[in-house]
Image 1 (cartoon, rainbow, N blue to C red):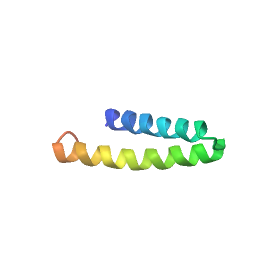
Image 2 (cartoon, helix red, strand yellow; image 1 turned 45 degrees about the vertical axis):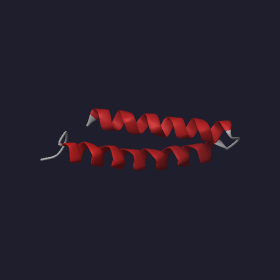
Image 3 (cartoon, rainbow, N blue to C red; image 1 turned 180 degrees about the vertical axis):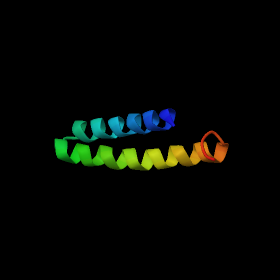
Length: 56
């Protein structure tokens, strides 16, 4: 579970930095990072669940 959260945080940080470098405002970078975090966490948890790493 910790690995999934860390991977999602890295994806969110990377997308936020890209948004700032491209000339975006900080609020837009935050929204981009939050969206990327939600998507990345869902995908990573889905992959980990299908591999049997997490789950019941």
